[in-house]
Figure 1 (spheres, rainbow, N blue to C red):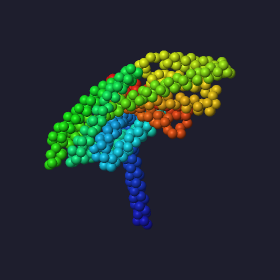
Figure 2: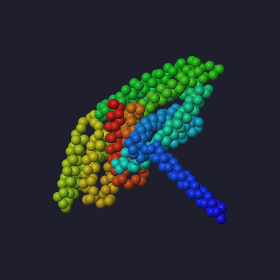
Figure 3: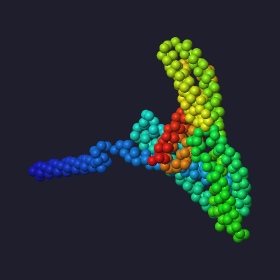
Figure 4: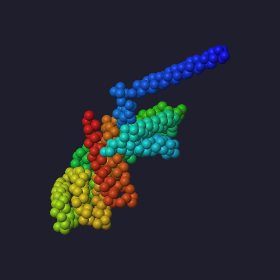
Amino acid sequence: MPTLVSAVSLIETAGDVASGLLAGVVTAVVLVAALLGGGLILLFRRRDGARPSSANGLDSLRTKANVLLVRADEAVKAGDDELGFAMAQFGAERSREFGAAVAEARGKVSTAFRLRHDLDDAFPESAQKQREWTLQIIALCESAIASLAGQDHSFSALRTEEVAAPERIEGVRVGIRLAQGRLPAARDTVARLEREYSPHLFASLTTTPADAAALLDASAATLDDAASAISPAGVNAVAAQLAAAEDDLHRATVRLDTLEQRAAQLDDSAAALAALIGRTRADLAEARTQREAAPRPEERAVIIEAISRVETAVSTVSSVSPPVDPIGSLDTLGAAVAQLDAALASARNQAERLEHARGALGGALASASSQLSAVSAFISVGGRRVGADARTRLKQAERELEAAQATGADPVEALDAARRAATHLRDADALARYDAAN
């Protein structure tokens, strides 16, 4: 019996020991887990003690995105120029893949600029959404740049191949003769622009005839050197000279084209201004009738103020003698007419609003198109000095202008889009000039 008691006692003692050991193990595990959890919290805690945030590093990401936007935009423009050279040199078929790459890159950059514009919205998104959009901008730009770089490398390799140099030389000579035949008309165009329009509207184009003539002379001289170096054994040695001659011819042609386009834009703006003045005088007669019929004094006061502003604008733009600024006059008169439209909106029925919008749309489109050409040219000349803000406004203006020009667009909505485009272009011009001066 004592033996049995002793055995039971030993079993109970062993159980107590086991329970103690188990409790000790559990306690140790809990302590280790607590220490690990605390370490992880400290590891990922910011220096100021705050938890990690989506806003961390957002400023640096935005800076990187802005830089890439400029690089990608410049890469697309360079790709367009390079595509023109490639098509002239290798033909449309061999340049098809390059053209597709440029179009795809342009689409990516356009999407990136749209995201950049959304980031500037008056109602900002959350930090997480801003981070996502900024990373999308970076990815789109990097993809576009890489794609264009690959195509440029491919065509650089193609240009090192043997080509039919004699045929290319003759083709460039024909192009030079055609371009030289345009020089007298270009000189006449510059003289006419100087008589009719304000100098600041075409200041960068006054030397176009002389610049184009110098480029054509350089191209011809390079061709002469290349022709003397051709031998039956091969033509690789003149590939660089041929490319340089083609480049000079291309640049001369672009300068002449740009001068003609600018002259046409200014002529269109002058015609649109004359038409707008005529329509505006009819609008003033309507406004005076509505002024007398306005039921409340406050409505009458708004119409009176709008009439006064339009009368002043019409008098100002009508009394200017050449040289004139039709683009600025369209902008001034258009802003006054927009105020008058708002004042008369409640008095006009839907048919009258549509009819008035159709009449005003032509001038608004001409003004916006001319401004778009001028701002685009300024940004191109400014190169990488012009930052992402100006380029974003320019891209938004392009989208608004496309919406205004869309076939079948509602005239009222199209007129509003054209006016928004003009506003974006004024902002883009101011930002671009600020960047270029700093």
